[in-house]
Length: 499
Ligand code: NDP
View 1 (cartoon, rainbow, N blue to C red):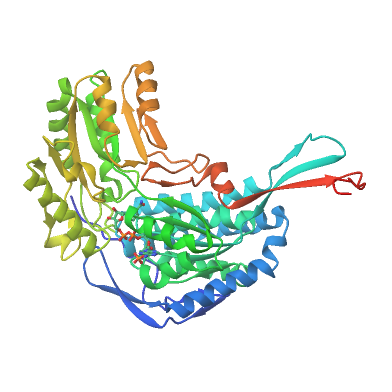
View 2: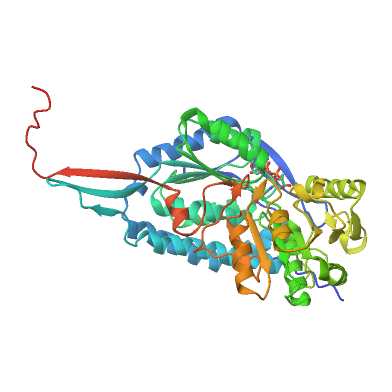
């Protein structure tokens, strides 16, 4: 297969600065970003000091308490968000290139992410203008209404696997509801967030409504989770950091939503076409090189088709074209960073030491088109036991484990046998069984005979240690609002409770 490296139009060698109170400024320090596809230096980005993060929080506070944004009508905010969505579409090719250059994923995946980001802004622009609240029939002479109001300043901490999309999932409902925001992208993938700031500036978003602070978790993330000036923190990332964020948020009991990843099961019954199941399995685990919170990473396969499934899965996975994201032939890109690659390779070693059978992959790909990039080939383990670390822990890389079950109840038991509960799927042609199994799986996002379809209209979030609360859909908007009851006394008379 010939390699066709696209020449990106977007300029990476430019100033990547913080955006605070409507102005771009240099950070207190600088970080060098490395290309996941080559391992070579990509560019330098500014990073904020704690003081600059505090400044951003204060700007968001002022914009909420005194600025025009929360007082605009829903239709006015919607108008802005529609324009923003259109602008993202207009700049889609540059944004997609940036996402691929910075995070490594194949361009076709970045293109989907950018389109989904625009649609997320569009969805919340539409939703905020729809009727909400309640009028309640309470005893006369009172009249009660229930209204939703913005929460205030929202701190938003996002990871590196879907940089712009995760920012959109958080900014869109927050802005639609009238909040102001301080967004912290991952230290590894800040480029599209800064590009977004440029768009927001061009569209003349009022000062301080969105602030973007770059930097690592301890310097730029933790002060957001801690600050008493922040009313809500929304976080996507690992369980460990999520717990630290929740702990830090306790100081002023800020509202918290957490989206923390998973170890999601895909259950395959023997009555389902094996080739089709394998096709979905490839998509479930190797899309974005497995760096997806909802990735299907545990394949729980009925005993009678186990061997066939494993051999077909291995045969198809072997053919996946791994390469740089800008190569038009590439189907799976590198991992985001050297750290993540080492973490994944370490898990592969752990799996081998635990006695699982390595059916495919397990190595870093080097030389030729891989250069010094962070490439790990598709990896499949069979003969795994439920208590192995590679079965229990989120690896966040292209590593699948295939488990065996006998009977529906064992399938359900295995599916639920991790601390996570983000996503899950079942493949069967028996509709009753499909429904029973999916009902029994403790997860917030589920599919029957499918995997990974994500709809902005449907809630996203997990059971158990996969998080708190939901993003997307109407639930995602609720998470950025407070509920207030307003009781109007239509006939105020002394009540004489005290003499
Ligand atoms: P983290 O959970 O550490 O990072 C997620 C975000 O939180 C990043 O923006 C990070 O900043 C920030 N952060 C880190 N420490 C703090 C802190 N103390 N207070 C506030 N914010 C903080 O994930 P990693 O990037 O380290 O990835 C590790 C593992 O997490 C992955 O291998 C994967 O298992 C899981 N993960 C899950 C994701 C999901 O979608 N559910 C997404 C990403 C990771 P920075 O990175 O800049 O330091």
